[in-house]
Length: 346
Ligand SMILES: *Cc1c(COP(=O)(O)O)cnc(C)c1O
Image 1 (tube, helix red, strand yellow):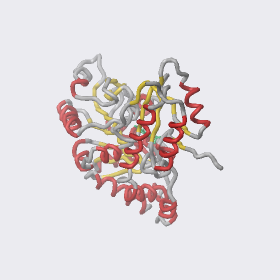
Image 2: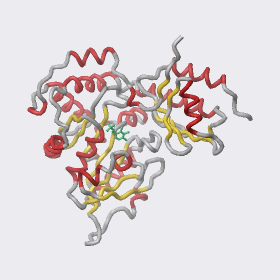
Image 3: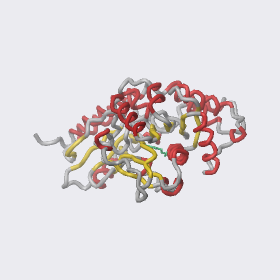
Image 4: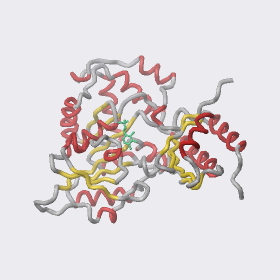
């Protein structure tokens, strides 16, 4: 019998469902660099409208949508303010320095989440010694924070803070729909509070490729120029856009199942004798830490041999992520495997 594989490494491992593949194959396509791909236009208008924003831009990755946004919001020698674990800083290859010639001001939040008090000393005064503070960027949900979610109240306060300090307000919403579903938030509120939002279709939404950047018409017009110069202008991209449209129509509400399963997995982690601490998941990401005496790579490879794949996320921390490819059978299988292991001593 084939071993059951439970791939919890990332929600980027999702594969398009048969229905999504069918929708992709039926897409109306054209040359999008000439503005003639109807499926791309449909997706860009749809995602912008969902957030009450004027325009959207379909890009190959979330790194590109973030980098384009920062490039359009800044001029060289400006400064971008973000949390120290933010993807735009931590996981985008130094792109802010390379693409925008800007410096970054890091702020320490709590599990990836910042509040206005954390920003007290982050904004530069007008002085020839200093870069100009230009952008405040949030990440919701926070990846390195463990899928944590900003409350609407706290986003409103940060938005007001950005306005008072003449900062553009950008949101890395790679997993924004996870946040929206977890807290029953209204996407239109996000559109009102942020100057630009980046959203990934290739994470929990289950599309194979693609992210969108949304903002004002003027902003997106400029963003389109930057996308071209980065080599992100795609020709018959409608096949991919159609997958994203299918995901928006069919895969948003099911994120609640991913969140429930993440809680079940966290409970199972809590039963493992090697595990010292598990953070209670707010969405689809579970972060846990092994005891000092445990060799993390050994622990992960033991699970890997049993078909359970997870990622190291620090010297003792590991990450598991639920997504479209994980169903209740996988969870039952994990329960049985956990029960068969030696239980934590009481
Ligand atoms: C995945 C992710 C992105 C985008 O990554 P790509 O692989 O470039 O699509 C951006 N921000 C966060 C928080 C992410 O998790």
